[in-house]
Image (cartoon, rainbow, N blue to C red; front, side, top):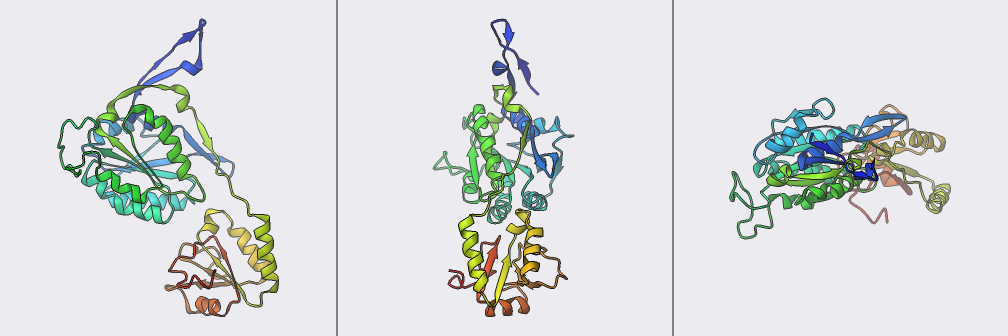
Length: 334
């Protein structure tokens, strides 16, 4: 992809000045190809590939760049853009938000079909990278096929709708911008507390523009997700409350799994004999046949779990945001 250009200083080749002339689309693909993550001592590619439906806005540049990396970033053709987004979100959930897949769709209706799946990933804090076609930055030609832009405001387009359902949103208007945008998008997707989908709009003409990128931008990078430790003062306060509780209960949510704390939760429950109820996202925190697993809680929960919750004098919420399907009474947990 692209050509490599060397510049010499003092008769020696300086790596700092080594450049690669690539299109924006080629540079995006090459950067993703160089990202890895360390999981349990094993190094894996951070991006597991992607889903795509090609058309105007993503086929001639991004599609061509992806065709060169089939072995490292496999692309799976979707039958519907919304389904692609759901599949990418499921992939992220399966990997406990430590790896992601990208979705690419054509400008206009193709990208519009991704909106609901982006909202799902946003609400559930699941990292998905969306690389979607956008209208020509030069606005020539205009209008383009299936254009879904605001005719009275050419600065605003369909892709702006994703601002509300993305943890990170950007529109690339110059090839150099991906040097700042891609690392920020990945940092957002790997943030344990605030991860979610990242949306990058790619105008059709900008995708094909070339730029002299520093080769160091494409160096192999191994990511490691930093775990946030509990505040000692808060732990001490919780322990003091538990020591005086007569009927304590634990609500375990999806954060237990994402935090890789299933074994610790199980050991704590067994050591204290505190019953555990689960949110929808927290199913399988404890095995279904574990004697301390009382079942799911909330409006879609079990009678047993809700009965225990009604009599509890202390509720310890672990890895849950206490959404409305879990409780309709925030005063209880104030």
